[in-house]
Image (cartoon, rainbow, N blue to C red):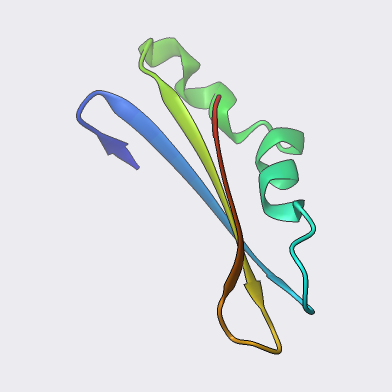
Length: 65
């Protein structure tokens, strides 16, 4: 998502119960931010994990890319 001269990259994962950090890890491992670096804008990585059992957000991480 490009908004107000900033880039927001989201990754959503479904986990069994507890957050595992896989959403944020995938953003980093797949290097999704690389194609936006040439813009010179701040990049925000947002990883969200949902519990399959609770059907709710159980993990939320934000980092500057």
